[in-house]
View 1 (cartoon, rainbow, N blue to C red):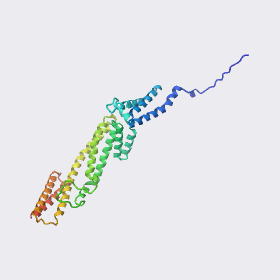
View 2: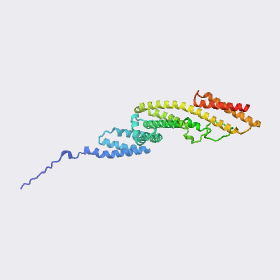
View 3: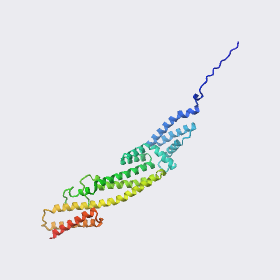
View 4: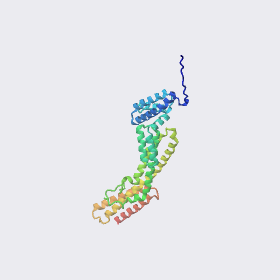
Length: 327
């Protein structure tokens, strides 16, 4: 008796047959990407060795799958480089800047949003936060420089809103009588001193001068060089104009101080009779000191300027007082 063996052939779609060499990379891709993100988080926290070890395992996993991942290799090299400390880097500058931008992506994005919302100081703080992670970033430097330039613009705009009229309002109408013996070159301020025109101008000057080294740092990046050149020119122009503006404001403030002292002087002696020789001597010396201040400031003021007109009026008042005293 013979036995027969029946073979059953099941036809299957070839495209549905599993291919280990094709599916393994797909299975490993998600874990590798997750590990890379964990390594980035560790780099942000300053855990450089742990991040380097994790990225090393990710690179080896890609090599086993025969996948070329240039971006992963750059990030692995950056983590290895960070393990050597904060000294000179062995990485090429473009590789370094791409890696820093990857690590500090949150800070850079938040800084750009703050700048778009016209919040320059918040944008500058985000740039500083990026520098605390890695102080070599050119994008964070450009972000901070741009924010400081915008802050200087806003300070100048606020100073323009106050104007010279408000500076004059800080004169005799804004303060009470003061002792004529305490003549001062500083203008009394009836409001918050941080909100006066000189304060806004000083803030703008500080912002612009802090922006200069940041622009130099950012200009090392070829991708930012043109923008840095434009920003540098804008900062220089604003600094030049600000120097002139501050000089004018300082002269006006000194003239207003003379006006305040002159008013206090008149109020003090309005109803007094100078009978004693000591009173007359004090009057002459104080009035002479005020006249000398007015003449010195008038000599250094541009002709036909607001401060020159104010000082000319004061000089006439002081001369009239001298004539009235000697007559």
